[in-house]
Length: 84
Image (cartoon, helix red, strand yellow):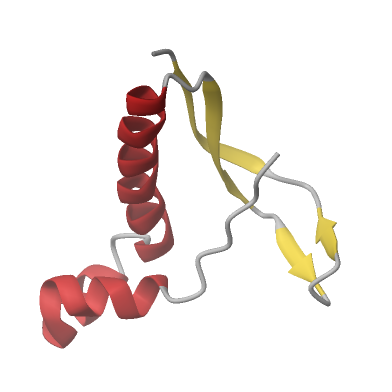
């Protein structure tokens, strides 16, 4: 199982849409969810190329504690099954 923590979602959104757009959309759009959605799409394409079957979950609420423990509860934002 892999867990990927995106640490700079706001900075990525700022680079993509600029500081003004980030301020405007930051109140409406969840930058972390948007970056995760883009990553899921890229990972899905790569997995399909390699014939990897997987389930990719984007979750809300999980926190990494002291870089050693994953704190739960989680709410699933997106769930996608990848079939080659």
